[in-house]
Image 1: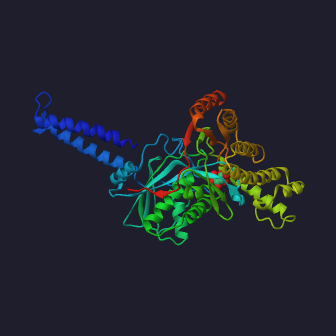
Image 2: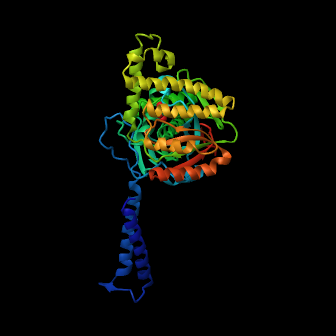
Image 3: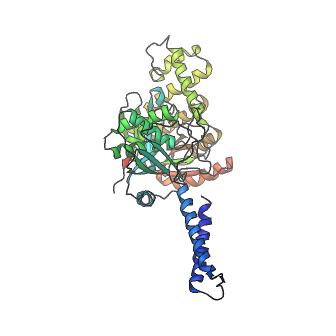
Length: 475
Ligand code: GLA
């Protein structure tokens, strides 16, 4: 908070008190010097000073955020050191956001929201043209938006209490490792795709925890993209929006992510998991069996420093394809390699590259089996596949961490659990668990207790249904 606010408030109150005494000519307090009623005069001076300070103090947070020195590193924007999430315990919803927007900008906005996601199985397969099985969850990034008369995009984040702006006519600023990179990256990507954007004020509020592997970045990108095209009036298919948002993250933010997160944030369906082919972008909806909950266990270990490792894994997969191509010329991505082919040519690959490839190749096979198992209601098979997936991520892909392994081990032995594994990019973040509805209360209690005993960390456990993808929020 700007220090001028409390000082201003104090002077305003003192000013009102003093001026009131002066005006009432209270003899006890009234003092006269050179014929001037000091109390009234000074009261008014203090009141004026206080009000000026209050106005200046409250305006400061709506000024442009100063750019930190442009970082050339291809890493994800920094997280807010003071906040573990966009809005832990957040309660701001459409009506509150509309009200806040009205007081901030003086106009009535439209409201959009986009969800975070969990991935049931198929990790680090999307950028290898493979298969994934994500579901959108009931945690959203909310955006209120209204047009401006000029060509500026002025974005205020409620979570960070910061405002950033760009002028659409001047062109994009350099990304600088800031939350606004996601917003401006999407605007830049939309303009590059030929969308005519108009100047706008935006108010952003996120509920998806940051750095928890639940895809807060895709959620802000998608919500923002939907809001900007909604305002400009040019319709955009959800799959196209997902592609544009992914491009923003690859090309502007600098994280070489696959399409999974943006895709499910755009195309998620309530009650269903998506079985997505990341090459063709064809997908089918697989209903979650009744009586099963998605339980998300947050290890509270942030994956802040993971982006370098993430890009490195991706390079290793590309290296695998390059090394295999003399023997397997049809192979464009690891998606095209069968487990038998990988075995046959394993000696042609350095051991770490072979391990990365083995994870991707076997994970793709697991996703196909897992979708079939879920469709025929075979939960024990699904559970085994989730266990193998986690093990492969831990041993071969090496993107797990001690806390994730602990959390999975603790969860998997609880009654009523039909699968537990890390979800998202890894190096911290959350596990996803399929849990029998009746077993959820005991599960939560036992897991948080045992996890705390094992690691000393207090976890967060959330239960979500599979949610609908991004949309305009109805008035
Ligand atoms: C992150 C990326 C996704 C995907 C997962 C790992 O969430 O954004 O594209 O690669 O990691 O499966």
